[in-house]
Length: 177
Image (cartoon, rainbow, N blue to C red; front, side):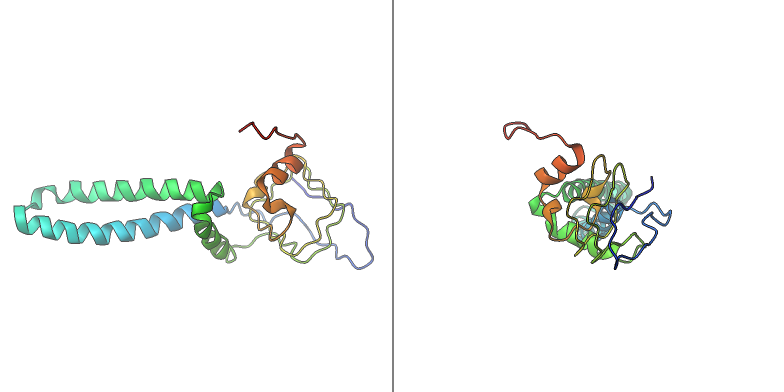
């Protein structure tokens, strides 16, 4: 999908707002980070536990099974925490912030500090796009995809209900989930 600019300001720079073709995702980075950290913790913990149990019961035959179970638990935990971080669960907001930090090393579209007044992002793919500090007044977000994975900074898009409203153009009742 291509993004179009509908704003006409004398000081605006016309840059190509389309992505560079790389399909990078913050969700992948977050999940990878969580799995890696979880694996390190569980392998470290598992090694000590295995050494203790091995001294007691001589468990050489079940070493592979024990390692497999630890890796399975670590992967499951990593996927769960990664999913919660992507869905902006307040308990895992620091994990999401780490994902944002790591995604700075991935090339992405940047509108940082840009004047996007009255820009049209209808049905645009906005994953990993940087909108921090941008003027996003009167922007059309209708049908935008993966905007929840963009760097939105401190704007009205940081509020989930407003984000859903500007993308779907449908207001939800407070009692609906």
